[in-house]
Image 1: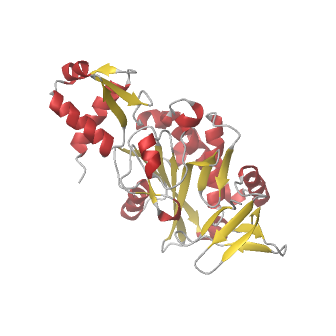
Image 2: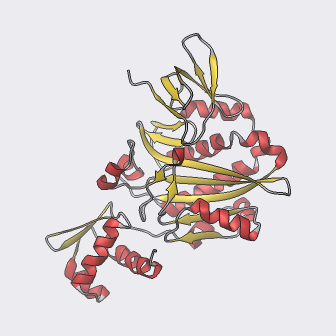
Image 3: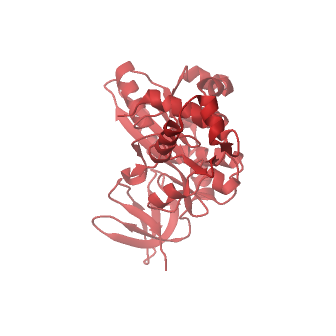
Length: 338
């Protein structure tokens, strides 16, 4: 069980230590009025449980990638525009949760809310593509879930909701100077230079009032230590690795919310043609040799983009266009390596 009181203490120590490029152990002991034994125990906890890239070398403490600035609900709310504030009255901000999607799910069921947002400094059981564990260390990264409610008449269009969310996420990353090599890997991964930098998980629920409640989870790697990257079972990168800068998470989250709420509000009227053309600009597989595998068969061919219903299109060796279904944990699509 997570000791939230202990996590708060560690957070305060991390804020103090990280503001300097390096800091003497003695300076921390004096400022925080703790013993060296306690400090070493705290640092060990930061390294293991929180996955903070923190080291002690010759009585000096180093925190990578640099200053840690906590998520701040008030700062984010102050950056939201009027349209966003019409839908979002509050942002729930945690230091640690099992999953932001799970928190939103509980709120959805308990309070019968139509809209809501949850962010967290870390997740202990974040879910990524194919329902694998999303490595979610403390600080520097973004874990956000948004609850959005649609009328039942929107059911057919919701099949392409991941396309809209992915395009918005990519454009916000570009605004923060992540370059032209950013791509979307169908159905829900964001890649930069052939390495994963973010991901999306959308869950749909139907209520008795004929409304569809969607929980939109978005994760962005702000910084990953080399130790953590070795644990991840695919090539991954981060905002810091690609830009050399620490991501301003509060501003990024506000920009993401403003753009998403604007586009979600207009989703009913969004031209499908426009969305599909936008997708092509970022399509990781478009015009490339790809392999699709499931428990039933393997298909090889050329990626041809997205169908109107959100399924991916592949042209096989007979020039037939086949629509690919995605079942989390049961299907896989990747580039042909030969």
